[in-house]
Image (cartoon, rainbow, N blue to C red; front, side, top):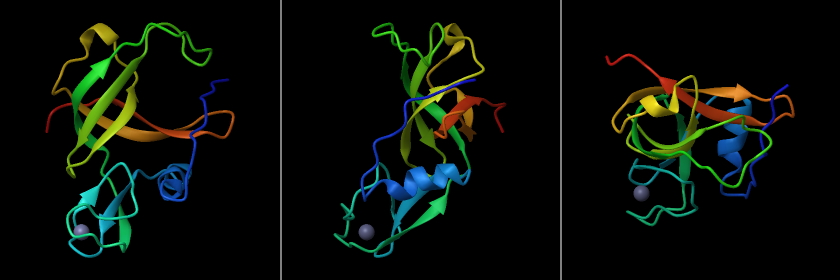
Length: 134
Ligand SMILES: [Zn+2]
């Protein structure tokens, strides 16, 4: 069994978490100027449009930065875990965990690939792992 703390959703972020439950990493796209934005927010910072839709991200990206949190200890992580900022190839940045990698081997710029994992308590989260460069 594996568990994760569920996200706090708001009307602005609900589509993102619902997308994960369907296995997709969705990114908000402005209908006014077509720019992508993340984290989700109601108004485009470029053209002030309130109209938006979403695209499904490819999941390919690179590590922008990462940390290895030591405290507090959480019951749903065993040992050292990696929290990373990943730059998606679509041009937005996500907070995520890196898995299937020795934390000592994580580097800035490392190519990674994300997919959705469905945990036993009904929580669905995007998790990234190393990938071979294209
Ligand atoms: Zn816009």
